[in-house]
Length: 250
Image (cartoon, rainbow, N blue to C red):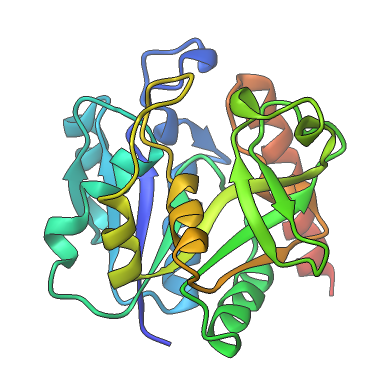
């Protein structure tokens, strides 16, 4: 299946307590976004586009050897707004678009290969990666119908008390039909608690329009964890070192 990858990488990462752009923080001596770019390449992405903003020139300089394309998100008005910035580069593209986050470096090849296979086999218009989180606070929830099809995605801040009891969460990782993605992006708005354009709202638009939206559940919630603090960065380093050691010992 032909696809391109858009990596969201514009944020400052204020909880890192550093002026360095979040995705440039070193993870085992490489910028954390390096692992996301490598994953996209390993999966066979035709192109890799990074959406950048904070310290954009520094980010470009640090990633000059990665052979990727850049688009600028200024101001930063949410995840949906971030992906909107890539439309100019993809206006004549009719394949699929994989959306990854530059601060989720532990995502595995195996999980993403399964998601891509589900998307292709189901002939889906969109497929979202989900997991069951022990503490889902802060994450968007995946609300399902009785037949387990996806009913909607609701952000934590906009969720009802009942919806907040759901443990299945939206990872923020998606695979879309390019045409359906950019059509739906034109229909979302910022009428929410954060006054931002949420990318998950694209899924809700597609569901409303009776398009096919699938969800692939990964069992290891740790791999979709975003890195927001120095402590989480250290935890990620330990996990990646442990995985590398296990792989080398086989």
